[in-house]
Amino acid sequence: MGAAFGEEQQELARVARRWFSERLPSAELRRVIDLPEGFDRAHWDEMAAMGWQAMLIPEEYGGAGFGHLEAAVLIEEMGRALDPTPYLFSAVLAADLLLTGGSDAHKESLLPGIADGTRIVVPAVTETTGEWEPAGVATEAVAADDGWVITGTKRYVAHGHVADDYLVAARTGDEVSWFVVPAGAAERRRLDALDLTRALADVRFDGVEVPGDARLPAAGEDLLERAVKVGSVALAVEQVGLAQRCLDMAVAYAKERHQFGRPIGSFQAVKHTCADMLVQAESARAAASAAAVALAAGDDELDELAPLAKSYCSEAALFCAGENIQVHGGIGFTWEHDAHLYFRRAKSTQLMFGDPAHHRRLLADRIGL
Image (cartoon, rainbow, N blue to C red; front, side):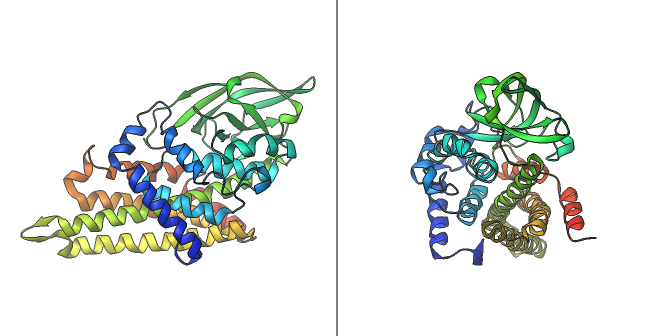
């Protein structure tokens, strides 16, 4: 994130990069993504011990009392390492939604567990269309006695198979509302997804009864819009880390791989490819940095910067991941090489929270075009 970081934040980035290089090298990443949970609980507990899950959460709820800029420091390094944990969706997105739209009781009951890593809470929004839009919410919540009955199926829920609680977007008449639903009330199954490093699940609510106070008090559609903005900025920052890592991999390989008695990096075509990757990565960093600063500051410019960052960073990450494979040549296409893992993550995150075309339409609407 470059100039957006102060000295303390840069030190946090160095600590995080060192931790991931030691705890999540390639062989370890491949091991943990094959676990039933899709990540290693020991890693998750270590992250909690360092206070990472507590970054966004105020001290009164057991958190560290920092903000979105500090979380962005960690998320960029997670993008470099293809971190498979639920950090982005639980400790960032769900925590922000609870802080923004939850009642005092919701915050008191859920945030301390998120902060110390003992509770995983994830949003359950998307359905058949995969849209993070009110029109895409078909799950229904019907008032009954002193509570609600929720019926519907959520698809592509990130880490939905390991969550302890869900923040469920459901239709209440003509409106969209959010509900806290314990995982034990749902049926869930992990999906075979393109991205091997971020687990997705289908979660089914078949007449699940929840008490009246399970409903978050904030306006549901406003909270959904907030979720898209926060998620877009977080993913944009993650995509910067991914793009930079792909560039680093390509440059390192171009220096060590020899052909015709010289490093392939000395050939003009490879130089141009790496230069194009650098331009994409640095431009993405500028866009994501501006959006992260606006989110941290509560700036109104976030309305424009969030879709701008998500659309540009999505394409930059996919470009760098694809060109990284090209620079590596034949070895880059193999299962044994990590290049395909980065490409899979780049393609997956390009679609999450809406594809680049969707976010460009949002941006055009917001600036009056």
